[in-house]
Amino acid sequence: MKTIASAIVTELGEPMHRTFILILFFGLISVSGFAQNPKWAVWETEADTLMSHEDFKGAIKLYTKVIDASKLNDEKSFRVLYKRAVGYYSSGDFEKAIADMDRFIPKFQESYQARILRALGYRELGEVDKQLVDVEKALELSRGEPQIMKWRAGLLMEKGEYELAKNDLLLVKLFQDDPEVEMNLAFAYYSLNHSDSALMAINKSIELDATFVPAYLYGGTFALEEENFELALKYLNVVLRLDPENMTALFYKGVALVELKNEKEGCSCLNKAFMAGQDDAADYLKQYCYGVDK
Image 1 (tube, rainbow, N blue to C red):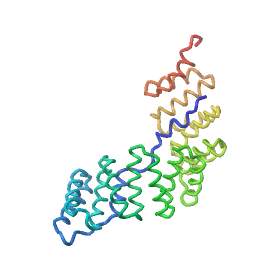
Image 2 (image 1 turned 90 degrees about the horizontal axis):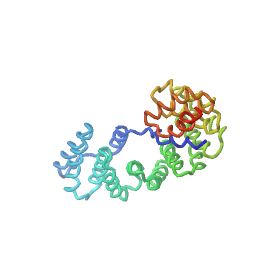
Image 3 (image 1 turned 45 degrees about the horizontal axis):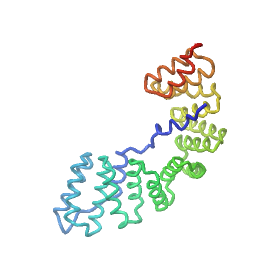
Image 4 (image 1 turned 30 degrees about the horizontal axis):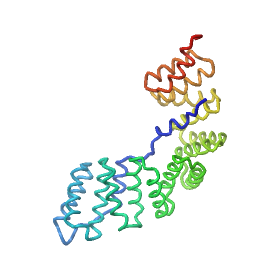
């Protein structure tokens, strides 16, 4: 049985949405007007309004006018640079957001929000190591904020540092246990070959939220890798009850069924999954469903 649990990791995105990030970071950096130059204050206020309406390009233009006019000669203009970085990030221009933070962070080295914003940009660009540097600094500056620690645990798992990730997640549990923490802990345990602990964490995740589909999907894949096909079916059937269009679960259900010698139903699941774009189903179809003796 090939390893398949890792195949669904990328499907389980982090629960950070750009709109939430925009509200969070925009609220953290409040800036009063430029008393010595009312024109700059007007531009900034107009840009703030455009940001609130998600007109990021319009806001960026006005923030840039403030930055160019002020030449970043005081603290207020640097904080407008931060706002422009939020605009760049929210509009998907991650490299420019990072470039603004590269200028902002040396001036405000105690701002963990700035580190998080730059780390978000690195995340979008797939820069795990650079992301981790900023997340670790943000964690230090925030004095152990659990959400940031959870983020670091995810990065450590991406790097294969499962023991360190497990330790972070166990600490997070002390402050705020939730289905996602338990599911990630399960993945760390499983990667450390602690399959019993992994399934206990999966079941705890389900106990915390009986509708949390990713936990059932992980449970199904773990059970498949352990060749416990009947247990895998129990998890996967719940996934399909909660999310009938989940083709990953349907593919894995097909694998479990053909392994249990139920080729008719299993091949039906595999074929439907393959037609929906699950290319890995092709090998199982060829082996179990299209052989000369079938």
